Length: 297
Image (cartoon, rainbow, N blue to C red):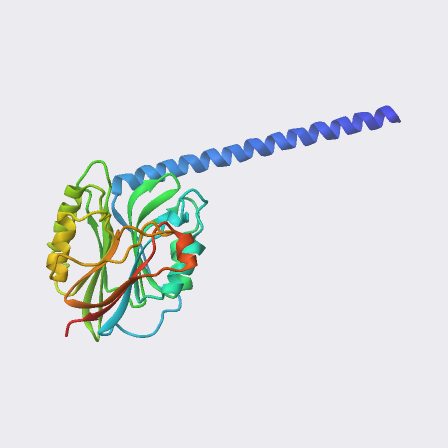
């Protein structure tokens, strides 16, 4: 009897070991298939960059139309990875800050859309009842990274601008247009290059674009860590002067650089400030910049 129980137990152990081995093999197979799928998707995406990856309306839009005055924000969300960029992506942190700001239009940079997972940007936009446009600029190990615009009002047209004038850095912009009682407005969200000469080319390309004439707002991380020809051109053509005291936004814990800016053409900038709260200092390495704008009559 004892020997039979021992044999039965040994058989059970062997079956359990085989089952665990089969489970591990199946899990490895699933992971391998997922990696292959991601690699194929990554290759396809890299060949198409930059491209318009998402345009969505919320399931429950906010009523209202574009008027003469509006609030605009720009926010580099640092791939949803918080202040130091080493945490696991947590879009809820930056999402809370975006809801804190409550701008009519928000330009986002370094937005991460992970491979093989639900898109947190689309969930965020829908939860805030905002319209969304997203342009993928480059491929990160965790997914696609690019620029987005969230808007209280419906987007009437949208397009991507390729600003990759250097083989070292992939750069792009997403441009959207709105129509309302306040007239027609174009908004560009971008993240400019680190190199001065490339930034100058990118600014020239944006300002001369045939679809970006009339009232235009340019918002983004301009990497303007020092005065350069690109920022002087923007200030000369969109502000009317070459010396502007922009609010500091980077690093968020103790800002010393005014990297993030909002420029207006065909509109008056009534006020501009950094959104400096405890949540904003933790959610990204950049603070949001918020402006109140009045469209020209």
